[in-house]
Length: 104
Image (tube, rainbow, N blue to C red; front, top):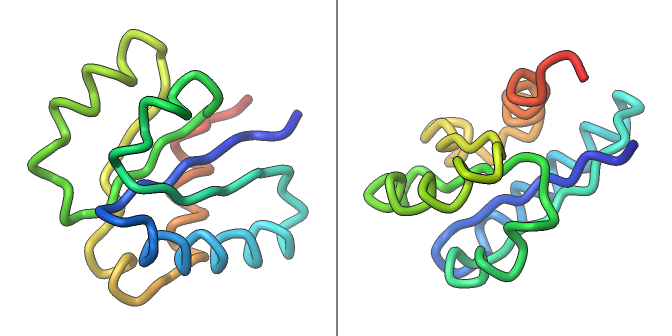
């Protein structure tokens, strides 16, 4: 079953590049993932259709607000590591997603 992953950042642009890198790496791993990037302002439009939410490190100040949306729906949510985000390290963030998904 396809896992739906959403990355959010301020405008959606930087997370879009990271999402593309994660997609490339996930494809090499044979993973069945749909990885999208959106602006944090669009989160409420997608919250019911995702399995994991990753948030840009620059939105750490919004973590409690975002958790109030994800927790009731049992959607794993985490901040993306600042270094991985800055380096657009798709492999490292893919590993983070796999860990968050657990052993489904």
